[in-house]
Amino acid sequence: MSSVLRVTIFHTGGLWMNSRHFCTAQPSQVAFHPISCALIEHEEHGPVLFDTGLGSRSAELMNHRSIKFMARLARVVYRPEYQLRANIERLGHEMVDIRHVVMSHLHLDHSGGMVDLPEATFYVDPREWSYAQRVSGLRGLLQGYL
Image 1: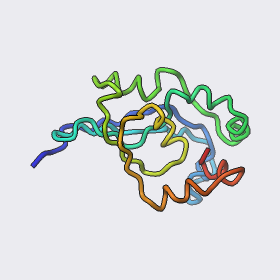
Image 2 (image 1 turned 30 degrees about the vertical axis):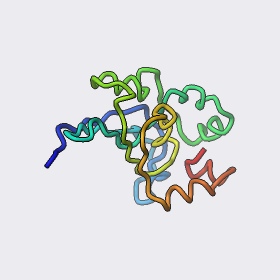
Image 3 (image 1 turned 135 degrees about the vertical axis):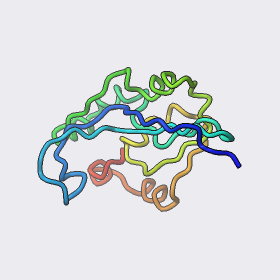
């Protein structure tokens, strides 16, 4: 039986925003919320990524009109060295090594790096995929889909 060799959690940026926007049970206070991913090094499947965080288009997206609107609710912390590619390379892998990606859901802060992995197979709940395909406009933006 094959096994997991190592799990490394890393951040591709973060958000300074009111915690209550994430969860109504949280206190209404501004706090830092990292945008995290995990690289699971598996004996049989090689490096498996859990979520993609912000990817190579993040700097471009931060200047998108819709994101500038959202910036009134949250301040995005992003630097090129936080990019998914930079993190993967720091962990000793190349992007082409990532063949499997498990997506928790498809909000931009979890899926922004998908574009950087064109050869990977992505695993996402069918209900999430269906919903992400239907939601658009201001409603989609406010729910984290772009």
